[in-house]
Image (tube, rainbow, N blue to C red; front, top):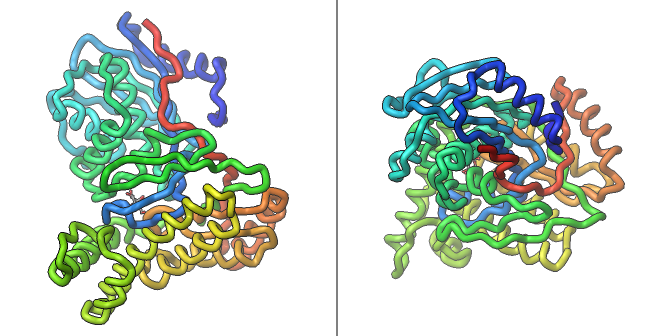
Length: 399
Ligand code: GLA
C-alpha cells in the first residue's frame, strides 16, 4: 500500500485488519504516523554537540492502537507478519525478536520519565526501507511513543519525546546514536529542513521549497556490518580530540563543537594523525552546516550543492565512513547534468546518498544512475524523490 498520502479508505483497511486481530476493549483508539529522514548536511556532528540539517521524508510508519485494561502490550508488524507481546512490568531487551526492543525501549523510557502507562493493542505498517540509513528504527520509536502517549492521554512535548526515544535506542537497543533521527521524525515540517543545534536541542526551520530544485535519494542497497562498531569508534576518537583541546585551550571544551577552525589548525600536528582527521571532519562539517543554512536562506542552491560535495569528500577521506558503493553513486551523480550536489547520508558504510538536482533533470538522472550503478556494482539501486515532509502526527483519535 502506498503511504505517501494516507486516505480514509487506507485507514479503514488497516482498522479492518486491526479488528480481525484484536477484540475491541471499548477504550480509546487511534492512528498515528512518524516519518523516516534524510540528512542534507551535518553528518556525525550530532554526538559532538554540533549542527545538523535533516528533512523528514515522505515515507513513514503508521501505527494503529487501542488501550487495554491491563498492562500487556500486544504488537503486530504487518510488513514482516511478526507478532510479539510484553508486559509493562517486565521490560528487558529481547535477544530473539530484536525489533520488539524499539517498542519495549520506548515504553520503558516513558515509564522511567514518570508517566503512568496502561497496556495497548498495536499494529503497524511501514514503507521506509530498512537498513538503508533512512531511520526506519527512529520512526518506529517515535510512532510508538506518540501512540502510547496519546492513548494514555499524556502530553509529552516533541523535543522531550525525541530525547526519550533516543534514550530507548541508547539504553535498550544498545546503539549509541545522537539525537538527529528521533528529533526530525518528531518535529519535521513540510517544505522545511530543520537546522538543529544538538547542544541546546533548539531548531530553526529553513525553507526548502523551490520549484527549480529537487532532493533525490539513491539507495545503494548495501549495508556493511561495521556500522555499529565503527560508529562507536568514531565517537571515542572525537571524545579523545575534544579532551586534547580541552587540555590545550584556556577555556572549557566540552565537545568538538567548541573548537574553531583556527584553533584546530594551530594544534592539529600535535594530535595523532587519525584523530586529527576525525576532528577536522567534525569541525569543518559544523562550519559547512552553518554556511549551508545561510546559502539556502538566500536561495543559493548551487552553493549548498558545493558544500554537499565537500561534505562527502570529508566523510570519505577524513572520517572514513563511506564505502565503494556510496562513492560510486556520488561519482555517477556528479557526472550528470543538472546535479548540484551529492553525498552519503546517515551513519555510512552503506545505505543511501542524497542528491540535489535541477528538477528538469530528475528523470534522466534516475535512468542513468540505475544503469551506471548496475553496470559496475551489479545492483539496481532504488531511487526516491521526496519533498520535506511533516513529522510525527495523530491521524485520528476515537473514543
Ligand atoms: C546515525 C545516528 C545519528 C547520526 C548519524 C550520522 O543516523 O543515528 O544520530 O549520528 O548516524 O550523522
